Amino acid sequence: MKNDIHPDYHMIEVKMTDGTTYQTRSTWGSEGDSMTLDIDPTSHPAWNGGSTRLMDAGGRVTKFKSKYAGLGF
Image (cartoon, rainbow, N blue to C red):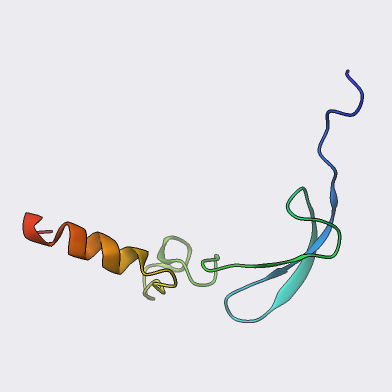
């Protein structure tokens, strides 16, 4: 195997949508960074049976609906 081609794994903190946090190893960011999730298994309908609605944090759902409003979705 080649040397120095593998990503640097380090500890980061992941913050879920309900405010809980956990530590994990990742290649994202740098040591000690905090990743805040917009959608996670506690809030996404695919994992919780579809009983909750997705939060439109970036306005993407609204933008999509207005762009394709005339198509009758």
